[in-house]
Image 1 (cartoon, rainbow, N blue to C red):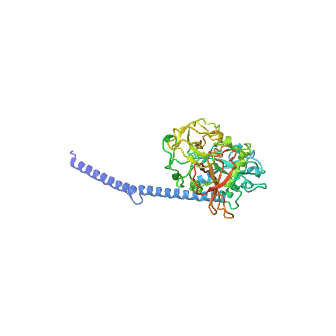
Image 2: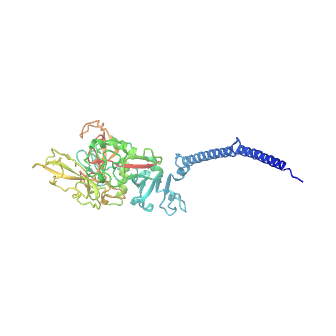
Image 3: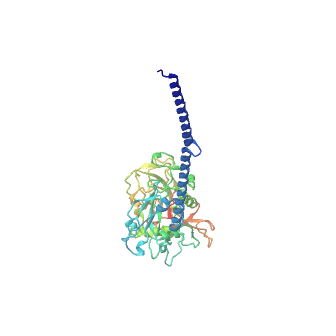
Length: 473
């Protein structure tokens, strides 16, 4: 019997065609399931979009929660839950609370915080259990500040006593508190002080004072540092600006040649965009509280600051490292005629050979100073040393440097002296107060507590700088 091979081939071809058709149908179904309107990819894309929407809603919910937390705790909304929970770190040195401020046991009085660290800052020196020795905090850029504990009742200007209250033409010392002397200050009664932040002090029990005199930032065109030691001494007019925020760092060139108005603006600029602190030029109340706080642990600092600052009569300051400095010359005749400054033409980097000067003024070697002329018989010169900030550990008081000496420091106190004619310059001229003594004067005549009202608010001088204070929001 013969087999029909053609028929077998026909069946095979039909099966193949059927198989191909089935595969095509299956492929179409698969493509539709993957790429169709309700396909896998569309569903995956939709799921991703839903997930993103859920995440955005969650973030919004967290922000809303953050706002509620901070509105209740801090009176503000920093924007995120993390910031809300970490915007302030409160420490207490009482036995009833741990280092994070958590209650272990104790009274309501023990619960009161002794120091509050704002977000973006950390403790870099000092012990929270010994705040009267000075606790130092630092921001991410390395600017340092020291916590000054201050109750509302302690935030006040020093009250001068005694029968003699007119300090015109001479230093008048406080009768009951020796050392608290003034010059053309108590004569006038129109001084105003627009600085400070009583609300913050009342809420947090203190404020932060810059650890150093205001320094020139590296971004300023008049900046000089150790690497540019041969840079020519810059035009003092450049420094009279508030276009740059000061720094509070060790080894900076102290910011002089700036008037009180620009010093105030520059101080406020330092943290103008910060959510947690506000920066200001130091006010008279904060200065007096700081002096009284320091005086508790440093005997007679308010009477004689010679050994705690860079003054003209300071002969011994320990400088262990190479520092940035300038040696200026001051000319004076016996009758005070022809008195004036010969500023250094450059800053140097190293160890100054001479610290201060002694009376009577001595003629010195001027060979390295191109703009200095050898004095005549009736004149004397003395070297006046300008130090960079924090140059000597001898100037450190409760972890604060240069509060006494080097530069006088502007405060926010001002007055027009309209109540009576001024014998200083002219009536109706705006004057501003400077504090703390300087490289030009003596530490016993101008101690850290000294208050001078003879300078116009627009004065730009080689021996006047400023200092910043921080208040927690």
